[in-house]
Length: 116
Image (tube, rainbow, N blue to C red; front, side, top):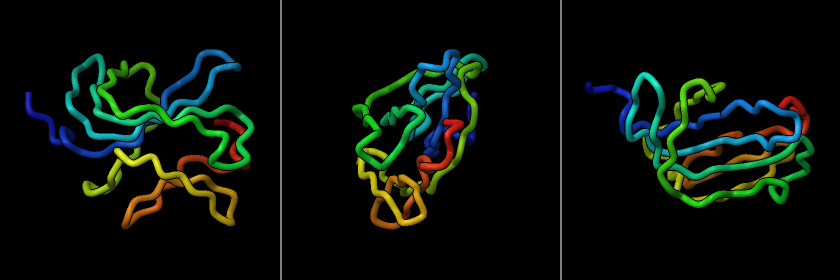
C-alpha cells in the first residue's frame, strides 16, 4: 500500500488517560501507516499542565516510535524542510513555546493553554 503521507513531517499530539499524565507531542517523519498505527522517526516533547517556558518541557531523543491511531488526538503537517532532529525551543512574547529551525517557528504549547 502506497500512502501519500509517507515521508511527510508531522506534529502529533497523543491522548492521555489520566490527569497526572504528561502531554506528549511527537515531531518527525512518517515512515509507515497502517490501519492500526503510525510509525515515525521523531523527537518527543513532554510537559505537564504548568508551562512557564521552555525549561518546563522535556525533550526526548530522536528515534523510531510506533503510535496506535487510538492514542492520537491531532496531527499537524509541517513543511517538508522542517528540521525535526533539532530540539531548539524558544519562548516568545505572546506566551508560547515554539520549536524553531532556520525558516520556521512552529507553536508547541501556549502558557495559557491549560488543557494540554
